[in-house]
Image (cartoon, rainbow, N blue to C red; front, side, top):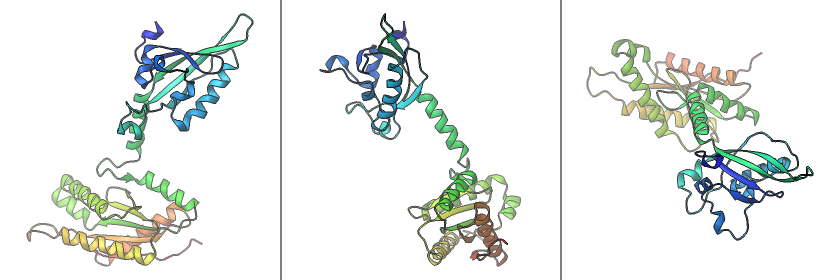
Amino acid sequence: MLEETSGDIVIRLDRHGFIVHASASIAELGSDLTAALLPPHITDLAARDHAAFLGEHVTRGLQGCTQIGWIEFPVALCTDRGTAYEAHFPRWYALTLKPMCDAGGTPDGAMCLMRSVQQLRSLEGELHARAVTDPLTGLANRTAFCASLRRHLARGGGQMVAVFAVDNMRALLLRYGQRTADEVLWGFAKFLETMALPGHELAQLDGERFAVLLPDMTARAAREWVEDVIETFAGLAAPASAKAPHLTASAGLARTECTVDWTLREAELGLVLARAGGGRQVAAAGHRRAA
């Protein structure tokens, strides 16, 4: 009955962890036990970087006579059945086993049950992606960006951060409506992605402001890149008629230091100064440390 359970794989192990029998559904992994000269070990089913983890789990189970819990691991790819997609997103299975003992109570192998958990893993990945992604632009959200800043601060910080915003978004929203405002924000996000250099990290901090982490850039190089972004956007967004809005952007610059809140506050204060100066420019609030 177990062997007929859809998607489940039943495996009989000897006392050393070698597979002596498996249900027909093991063919889903690309394994053909009938063609093997020597029985494969259970760890041969796991991806290389999880084989030792699986082996330790099975060894503990084979040493006792009580069932142990489930573990999850990606399966090894079969060279003639694995796909390019699976190379990046391998299939995950869960395994549990119940040791078998002889009449004297001596461990004599185990019965294993393998069950696909790929759908659950995919769902978890999708939920995580939604939790750290802005739904409108597809960029990382504030939570994800702050987590990245914490990692950089833990390694010493010093990277430059730019906070951008399209000028006069409130007036544009009141005049043209939310749909047009969303289209402008989406377009600016895609523009930033185009202008970003390798290694840059982009995020949407809220409904109006965008952040870019600029690692391996001096303050001067960061300012030059931000100025290029602002001027290029102004040129591309030039109105086709006198009635169309003239879109421009401003930015604030800061260095990653002290704390995440301090860093973002400095960059956002620079943005305020840039807008106060008329927009279409970049400003830095300066490196003032909290008392």
